[in-house]
Image (cartoon, rainbow, N blue to C red; front, side, top):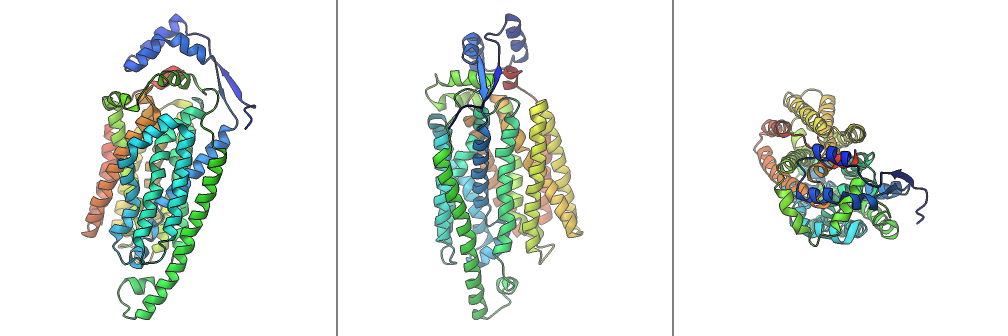
Length: 487
């Protein structure tokens, strides 16, 4: 692959005494590792005299986005057809919801190996293995398209969940390795907020179109006593499920082959001064575990992790339980639930693009966090009232789309903000710890809220979601470190 066509960004060969004084004044709270860097800035800056970005970062970004979108399509494959799937596989909606929760559980178990893999083996190895796990797991799920083999689908889901750990841990590092300070937030928005939503849109939109039958309500409600009707219905759903899962497996396999052939590990030169400085320091580190105490003692990062985990828990709960939240008030609107999920992700894509570009231009991490948390609280309360009073379905579309869209767009802020709070510690470690807490919180939310819904307290469930977003807004705080080096 040609390395030509890059655009150069020059920096001074050494920082002046006055510049060092100003830098120290702006970044007085940087931890001991950052202080060590500051003491050797002259040598580090000489190594970063000519930082460079390359045109081929854009194809690499596109491939990364496609892999993450495919991963999320697999994650929420059954989200908009959970009732049909539970009836077809003759199990409860809890076990269908467990297909998405398996991703969260895997993250908690595998975060350590994933962070080590990213730190020691690099981005290429991480994304190749992640893409391979999605392809392999997708074909295993195809083998479970018959109603008697739910456990095979669960095994396939667990295999694909390996990619969830690897690729989500890498999003901040990917942006830092390939993009300059003027493009990092937009890159993170594309990988962490927009690509996942594209994958979820595809799942929510395609699933109810492919897997459906006019006899579903009759069979699954128990009003039909005819075994023949049930048998014919199962044959129909079996064929549809096979085509649905096979299509995902084919796309995942194509993405794996492309990733294996062309995905690079890193560009020859650092794209920013901060990346050049931190790369020089990380080469002297022996173990990723040596960073953990510094991150865990960072109170501001822990607060951000709680806010992010709350957002992810709310998003995951609504997407997983959407049909159980909406259908009791709007029976017969199964397809609308799927389209509602798709509409919310399209809204998130637009908002994430706006937020990412705004962060690149302004670096307003704290203001963006506060605004998004406040808006998500308002919109979640709005859809709670709309559903409770059974207003027109179009109002549900709008309120749910805005609620989930705003929550999801926050991920464009969260990963970059986490690096700001923990710089110069490794991006993969901070992102991994933040994601691990998010997965634990998501499991707790989905199980707890699912039980509340089963007890016919859907309104209480929605108010708890709105209250969670309000708490996240209250916890928000302001602090920056990496931006100090790139300004």
